[in-house]
Image (cartoon, rainbow, N blue to C red; front, side):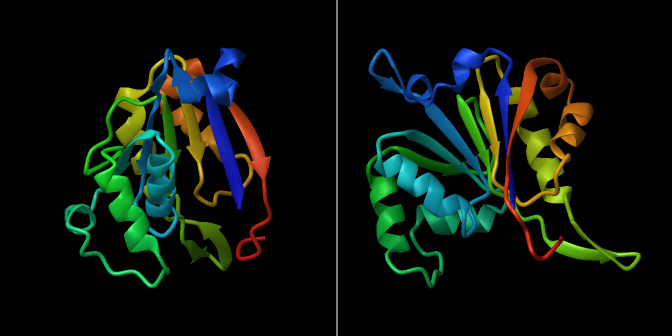
Length: 179
């Protein structure tokens, strides 16, 4: 897995403590994709006091999460999500909103194309497109989705807002399925 962090050019914004609190008020985190990575991430952040917006384009999924009627095989996930929603710190919706931190947790399935394995980045492309209008100076974008090395530059080329205002920071991990 390759995790990419895209941060605004001002290096002071990379101080996580500054991202967490400002004048005693928690910063807002927007988690894109409420699947097996995004939902527990959003819930855990909310339980720990962050103001979290969980976003999924699937209206049925959002409704099931709000009603706590989603199916899961993960032990205690329902309890975690219920606590996060009841705390008032987790809101789930189908559209992103302004936030200080964006965490993108969308699928990038391995596909075969002309005999080569590669990541299908279409969900990630759509997530970047959807958050683009909400990006501001000082934002941090964390791409939790599995993508090959060098791909964050693809997003800086496709998005004027990201291209002119953001600096990629890379943490590489190995993805056996692709390499």
